[in-house]
Length: 452
Image (cartoon, rainbow, N blue to C red; front, side, top):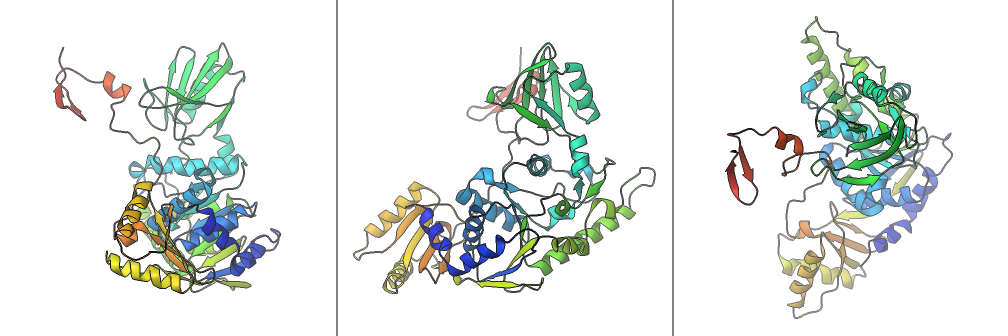
């Protein structure tokens, strides 16, 4: 059973069609939209259908990282990973450079690079802690990006000097963002804008080939024609001019925001912590002031007025010019009692509803078939292999969507891309650094002692 059936049902809803008309107005008209009554993953269906029907980029602002990640996973399932980007915060505490999370820096840079490259629009999913941090301006990013194309005339020495200027570290083997190595006519470089490093081969001063490669195996994965090599633009010690992320994105972006009041409160809380941390810094080292590096609530709320906005939730704060009421309810709880589930499915069927069970895998779908086959009565349901955040009941189109993890009351973990993160396998760099007397744990065979 295909997920497109549910998508089509949402597309045909009256509030969805009215929402689409509001979104598709010329960018000179700043739409103020309030979308009410969206429960669980029905919000993801609304966003995905609206995005597929327009040529505008979307920015989705959720209450926190966890909620943002769950809806990110929903949208990756519904519209494909290439159309959805995650924009996280880069660190755990202001002014603590050593606590920067390289995986998050990579994701942030990927978003900036995607916007700056002017590729087709995407859905960007984020949360207050990420928007709290200012980013380098487009002009500064262009200045700090090395663009290399197949056939370019470049000397290895020039690339080497530029990478040093970008604060890249020259190493024997590239393992993480910010590393590069030079071996003869080959440069390996791990840009902060890609989750795999690049291998650039030169023939004299001509770029002969560019490939991405796997850190663990050192084997090539894809051939590419051009790349952008970016430094760590989140390094707060750099002196580049910074601005709000909202000034970076396209003016035709449609901003979806949940609970604007909570969003503002979280920004003010973060800004107060940044001011407190700034006061404790050593005066011997020059640091950017909080207002130069971070955004407060008033600043962001004022900038939101420059975009078309869709407020999602029971209350709107931006004086909506259009209100679209959806009729969805949460998936009921069954406490793992299948008799209750079957009774609920039968009742829904008698009232004209179609029951769908969203399953994370084919095996899970088969499990439901096996359970219901043991019943002496007919059970009316359809399974869809689709891993979603939360189930919902849509009353207008009479569809009920259950998630398998809610039925079984299992914890549903979100998945975030962490492409460069070290796997369990030992890297070439780690292998060459082993010395006599070192211990290595084999995943299958246990502990080994390195000896000659």
